Image (cartoon, rainbow, N blue to C red; front, side, top):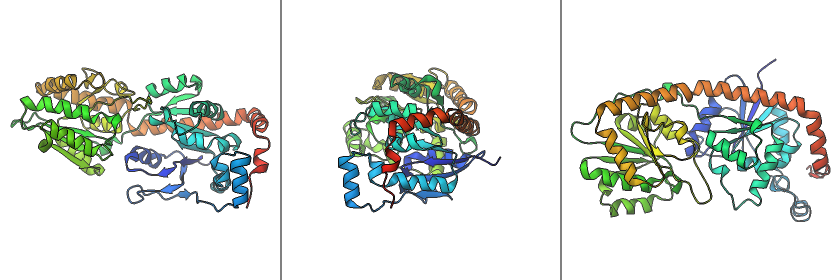
Length: 408
């Protein structure tokens, strides 16, 4: 038997902050994969040999209106995506489709419920939050859980939330972000003799990342370390507001907004820094992190982390061993933890070694890819065993559906 063929479906391939998804798809080696997307982005950063782009189809206006307003069919049908997706998956000989993000799985539900091959859906954080723009999002998630053999979560905390939303625990599998260890080597660090501490945070500048809390903590830390500097790697809509906050705190000249950095630039920043901050916060809609990629990458280089007890962060950062964990929005506690680490060269070195060890033992990319490929095989096997009952169920639920999809 040849290699299984896996379709990796991403609505956009690929936003700049989704490097971890690109790494995962590129690292698959026990299967053959191709990308399915509706929009190609940043192709120069994320080159991939086999990409299928779902084009926007011209639909007869009368048929389009009938399907949308009279039959109230979902967008995937009246926009023509259903037929195109079915055709390209057959042409590529796909055995399984891996759908990235839960809300994309909801969009594809009509197809998932009809396709004769299995799908798995991976959840990453924001897709477990309340989504007011999607009608009955949680109800549709429950339908999604029925339609797929396996559900992948990036952290145990996300898996726990998915169970609360109705996902059967026997369908859940943990698929952690894998860190390519050879690309993030350990870096020896010494306490700066001149007091020029370099503190770093790498993230999108959005509310969930807690950057305002980092700035307030850094302002306290600066009182005793006047030469300290804070480097913010990333872009986002909060940048003007954060710049104003830094100015108001009197630290603007020592806070460097660096924008998005290439991997080589980010690696140099990690290697030359002494601490990583990542005080993530839960938003009112319950949007939470899985395990932030920057936390894992920084830990791989031996950088101690000061973060919050939030989402999947405690699954990587062990309080007092490879970093410190504080309550959300506790900038005073954050500053005290920074002070405790920087006061002791032995503690900083020990935490850095343990941080590297954590990534090697629990987040190494090769091991995570092996596990993901085993999940693909498991899902394919489960689909084959369940096919008669599945076909009967989908036929009862959607009997008129396939015949009514217009073919041009």
